[in-house]
Image (cartoon, rainbow, N blue to C red; front, side, top):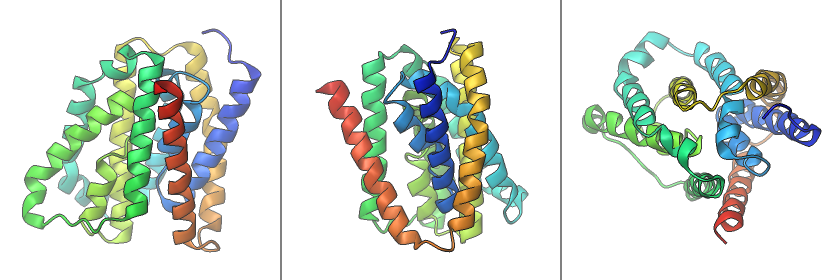
Length: 249
């Protein structure tokens, strides 16, 4: 791939503007939105490469603003290790799958995440289970990341079920997404999926992602969070079902 067509470039810019806006509003969703929308116009493996720089920078931004990063790392390092090992072990899934299979898997991950967000099951993880459950959740998240480029299942529902204080939750999500991004980048590089055009596309996508994130943060207090979250999950559900039907139908 030597050149990105103008339509793809425009789609990338609008996608990361929207994905950054969602992340600015609710603290997550950039990889999920970006992979879902880019998966409509390119193979998910290429979309995952373009995702790397915007995801890494915005998650480091999110990670930096929180209470006591050292304590968060100390508590969740077994989960982060699991994410790394799971992504490494399954790194060939996204690279080796056909474009249709990968897009359908991506659609399934989006639909599952959206359904969980809409249903809002009252999940709770007792403190006694965290020591053994965290690494298992990490490994499962790594496998899903390697197969779809989406970092949220089951990491996000699990972290939400720990009943963390809001700022601590946002920081823990930032840590999980940062580790997932780095692990995914290593897996994609291992299978030779990086090329100069996609790398430049990833770097160029950072600006609209940061602009969207700043806009989302500025509007966070003016829009009812619950209304926005419901619209977000409904949109993800529709996108996920479309990808499934388009590539398996």
